Length: 312
Image 1 (tube, rainbow, N blue to C red):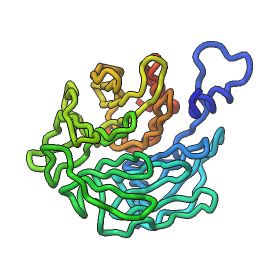
Image 2: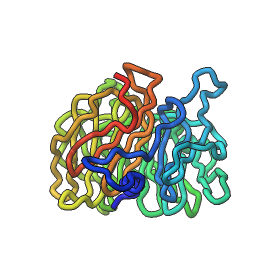
Image 3: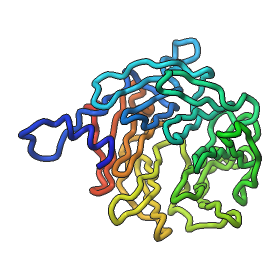
């Protein structure tokens, strides 16, 4: 059973009938978008993004922690650099904040440390994923924008590799994910035409090869995406959600299929995924910007559940 579902069901108590109403996780203390959320030690770590618009840096350095089963988020150490619309990954017990530089978070010491100095990576609007001990970064604004950048977290070094075919400097908001140990790049926004794309590439040992295109153009700003792994017969799949459309890419059959859309337009929510669910923590709800969003998608029944009262 997944970490997120186990924690929710453990709080139901005896005598519950019908579908459980999860009491964990809980919503962030206030609206936040453009942040990142990672599963860590059975809880959730939220960091960066835009918070209070009146704050000096819009709270872009803040880190929040929700312990397993807890009903309140608590502040942890700030990042050294403010970030929004950036990238992150978890490798083992380490969380990495990626954007302009790379910082790693040590949970036991409650400390962010700079792994790669500023100047070698894009600042925002890029896609990022981890495979093995390496971080892969593509697209975005600021820094080098014309290549696939690979961060070796052991050597603390950055190298350039060929990007997918048709990629050009200025392209951004790609969906960059690791599926079955390979790097996938889906869609993105054409930096010249400013139109979303339908491309789908996978990086193998012999370079890039094209995969079946998604049924519609896809990009990462509005909505959410994440990989849910080994869900019974579904295997490991990429899910992409928008307000009115949603798609599942099955990595085994290399096919795209429809699934249940969000039903609400969100700007850059935090996404936490495990083997059985995808949870959205925050994100700016376009029709109600101050809403504290918290939703969960369960692929076995292809259903969304609001974990906070729906305001509209």
